[in-house]
Every structure is written in C-alpha cells, then in structure tokens.
Image: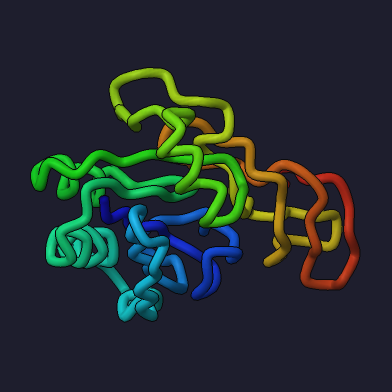
Length: 166
C-alpha cells in the first residue's frame, strides 16, 4: 500500500507535519518495502489552493491513504472525491504514524464526526504580553485544527507571557 504522509523532513524519522497543505515535504511510503519517495512541497508558500494541489498530488501518486496532523475542508473534500481516506495523528514520526495505520490504531478522519483531542495540534497564534507576536502557542483546536494558540507566546518585544486575546 502507498501512504502519503505530510512531514517536516524527508525521512521516515521526520516528524509528521502539523498541517496538510503547507507541510514542507510530501512523503509517499510503500508499506511493503518501506521505501520513501520524498518530494518538496511546491505549494508550501502558495497564496491559495495549496490544499487542492496537495490532494491532486496524492491522487496522481495513486496513494491509498493520507496521514497528517490536521487538514482543511477544501483538501478534505478533494481527497474524499478521489476516494482517498484521511487519517489525523498526534505528534509522532512518519514511521510511527504509518505503523499505527497498519496496526489499525488510526481512525479515518470524518469532518462530520467528533474528532480526537489532538486533531488540532500544532502551532497557535502565540499572543504574549509583549504584544501580538509570532510565537508558537500551544494550539488546542478540534476538528480542522483551528487552535486558538493559548499558551506561552513570544511577543514582538521579546517578552513572553501567558497567551490571551488582547
């Protein structure tokens, strides 16, 4: 079976990306041989349509499943139209995520059903006391992974602090 995993690196030991469409790498893993075909994501910086492009890539490679940290509605719709099941996983490596899929430990993502608590893990907005900052928040989202980024953030002035919406 061929599985597309969205990853932060180009090896089996790379972390699964927190995002689908803007992951740095597409890794197609052959579960029979554990061979990896790594491709740099050409749409990582696209202004729009990255999810559709990633779904088209998956369909073009003939994958039977997709694994990512979270996925947006447009990409999910395109993958569902291509009859490619999507699985979301908690933070882990590509190798562990594929093995979990093979062991039946991952459940198929269904936007209409309640999702696991980690379905929205990832980078939050990172609002700190120093102002609206580009820091990495805890990200507590559900569903499509739209986490609010509550947690420790790094403000523009370099001052950390508890996250909030001010």
